[in-house]
Image (cartoon, rainbow, N blue to C red; front, side, top):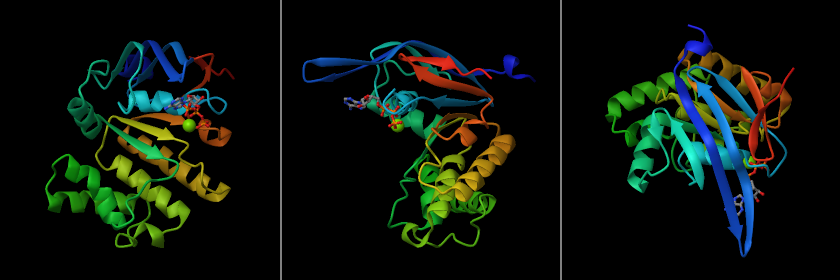
Length: 232
Ligand SMILES: Nc1ncnc2c1ncn2[C@@H]1O[C@H](COP(=O)(O)OP(=O)(O)OP(=O)(O)O)[C@@H](O)[C@H]1O
Ligand SMILES: [Mg+2]
């Protein structure tokens, strides 16, 4: 099946987002339209402050918006209650963050098990799936390590394992290589690429890193509040 025939994972129509600071209104996203299909990797680039993280937070139902329609994995995000947002996040999407955000008092294995336990998988199965995912990211020997005992590159890979373990349809990555040196960035990029081929999730990749952006099937930047294709 070609991409043009694939189902739509993300549909954004006329998205508006403002921030109000004291009596000043800042229009961050303005009439933004785009689609992401199943299995597509789409980059979101653009200078600091243009609204890249804001867009990801909206798509992940972490932040509200002021106009337009946003459908993610078949769910319209416009009028969700807090409980529905939680369920949506648990079932449909995962985030990969620049700061990894691992829980410091839990081992690598426990960190990766966490989303499975939240979605009510039993302990035994969660342990098995989390171990298998850690093995896939090359950390089969480090399951019992705590985040403070892991290098930056290893922590990043635990963050990827945690995002992918639930086999979600959509992964939202915000500068996933932002804290890594060149070698570790490349390693993480190859890993994400391989895992995407294997699991066929859609990936929205916010990045300043041209090399990382080059793995996208479609490259875009935010310009004047809209998502604009980068050609060439
Ligand atoms: N809670 C908030 N209240 C007011 N303004 C905000 C809030 N969050 C973000 N902004 C503003 O919205 C704009 C977009 O922020 P955002 O974090 O989405 O930028 P970004 O493109 O991710 O930047 P960077 O590349 O630096 O991470 C910025 O000007 C920021 O200051
Ligand atoms: Mg940001």
